[in-house]
Image (cartoon, rainbow, N blue to C red; front, side):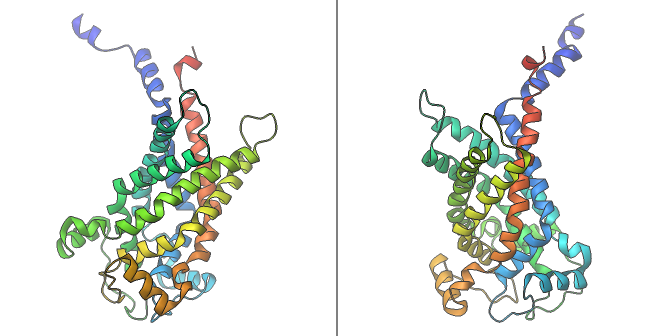
Length: 322
């Protein structure tokens, strides 16, 4: 009898599980992970191309133009070239996106004025910025590894076409740890990353919520699926355009110690001065076009899949289905 009492009836267990999954933070965490995996897989070829453009210096002209570069990538590496680094990216983006969306939910509650129901633009920016910092610090080693995987098979003129089998995610991390200074090597470029992510995520969330309201038909509680996609596309384009130079700096620092690329930046200001002197102001916006081309499907599908998954999880609340 004692042992049977210790095991809850299946119906109670299911109700408890549904109650847990329907909690706002839990639902946002799971839905955020789903949103990240969906959005990054959709635009993987453009994501990899953006990274290649970002780290391709003035002495390298192997990849020119979005169309020709995609053709070159397909001809030399096939479908795997388009998806190179996406597995690591998904492993990174699932916890990254999950932490970002769930922490944004938490920070919104913390910053909500007593008795208030709306954060206001400035508080949304702050909540988004803090969520961005939290998610980056939690998952940065996977981000730098993804960058290395995206670059190591690219046939830059100074590197040549690799003919040996390329290492995977864990092998790359182990090599970096062993040969590039230990754990600190897995956080190389964190400074410019945080400098760019904080305003990016803040602007992204604040713009999305403003656009979401704008796209909501009068008298409706939520916009249509198309409205959510459009709101996500606009918010992503605005946030990316404003903070893009920080993204270039992040990628350059992540490959700063890779052989054949020729980057030896001492700090952020040294990197900015060298890039502008050697490549002009356009060097700070390398890869912006493929980045903007991927923004609409990436950010739009991210917010849409997040809201769909979150709403499904919240609807599991047993109190709504007594």
